[in-house]
Amino acid sequence: LAERRACALPRARSIIATVILAFDTSSAACTMALIGGDGAVIARRDEVIGRGHAERLVPLIAELVEGHVPTRILVGVGPGSFTGLRIG
Image (cartoon, rainbow, N blue to C red; front, side, top):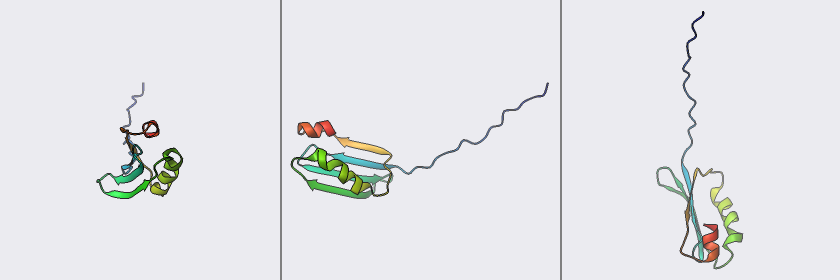
């Protein structure tokens, strides 16, 4: 019988930089930031909306991200309005 040896190949490692998308909609302002793995703020937005967070949230995130791919999401959950809690 021929002896078979297991060939240990190095595992492929994907190197993905950590980018955190953080947002809070529990107050009158819709606040969000992109934060790098080193803690540096890449971009941020703060828009006082009052009402209408649900309509404005996705367009604001799209503007903020601009080519970055968030690997983590951080969400503030309140206390706040019902809409703020539902989004967060």
